[in-house]
Length: 625
Image (cartoon, rainbow, N blue to C red):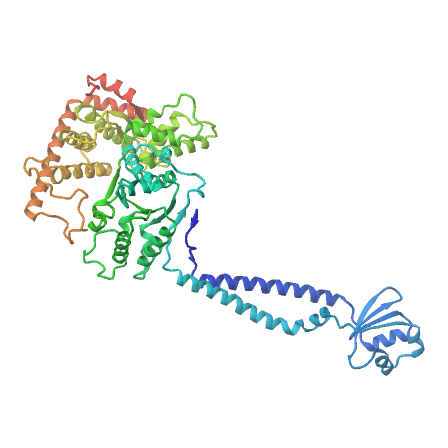
């Protein structure tokens, strides 16, 4: 991966801090070396000229070597000493002035040497030059740091897009590496064909859409698809996040947009991919930030640059978002992001294909069944399935096994869905019994209501924030629509634990809080979004994206307070009717409820076969259409 522009993330303080650290280290090295040199000098035995004269007169000296002002003395016993003299007078004259016996001096070997070499001169003047050199060295370090900071200031408006060339990728991504999005891949094959053979389209007067918006839930593979297009076409791929355009100073984001498009045009054919474009592409003019809002300035520049493409330009702009409802209409008009590709959550068959891709390079036992994993993961995205396979591998490695088993996959599904087992949470007898009845209430209601999903597992083992859980899986998760009867049964199932607590124990706990939130939200959606209330009628009172302020001023709703009160009454009516249905089921099947809760207290977990065997014993039918 090569970056288009070098990112200078360090500020001036960081640069100065690094240089000061280097200077300190350099000074420490100099001081240590100086200490060693001084130690060596101190270890040499120095004598005065008077002592030298006395030793000559005592006939203790064998030879004397005079180099400039330095006198090296060798004694008859092998000892070496040094002395120094003044440079103006000769050695013989100096010794004579000090009273040396000329007869004794004649018995001593004397060598006179005048050293004028460059090394000697440099060593002589080094003590004087060292402070000056050190001063200039510090100035040089500081000037280098300031130069880098200045370069950072000038490159502040440069693009932060990362370039992934087709030749430089260690692992080239193609459509073969993407599973579960057949329709999306079919839409993008035209883009690949255009990037490979632009003349084919130009000759017939066709112009491929320059803006492609990938829309879908998080983790469905939008970024992977964009990289696969670049890999199939073999073109440069510039990747950047929408948040990387936004800075504190107004105009920086627009400058980076200009620079990014300039670099992409120079590298064409190329793909520019903007991930999470809603960070800068939200609706303008909502009264926040004013005309100088940095986000709006960046969006304006993106719009202008997308209009500036020539017919001969081979640059494709791809963007990804999971909030297409908040994007500015100018982004979605023809000529910009006019091709919108929906990346859906995978169905059961697609999940099997995705699991096979993630199963590559992982050792499995021979009887592994990925179909079972696909059945137990409705609503999982491609990223979720990758986490399931990775967690299964972690489980196997943790137990020092060389192969991944089916149990590893089943456990990893529950960990990804609900969180890890809370080993430290030990329930008391009363809490355990209450949790067992609570989950048994969900399971009994789900088994009896005709439009509720079948129960596959019931457990009172704490995972994540849940004290227990009831796993329900649809018979056919490939369908894209749900009916009113299914919604009503789902609400009733959510209230199963709440009704059991109130009926059996005469008290309520916080364990039903999430159930009530889910049921209430679903009931409100039935009234305000889906037109499933006979009293309200076929009216959508809230947009598809939920209550939002973008594109609609600061209003949170499009109806009056009287209508709001009417909606609250309808939601309350749905919840009360569901409560009555659940209460009747619990009272009618009290023996089955007691039997399931007792089994849960003993075993803590009931798989589908064990659970169905128990309820069959109480006359409850399991088979559903």
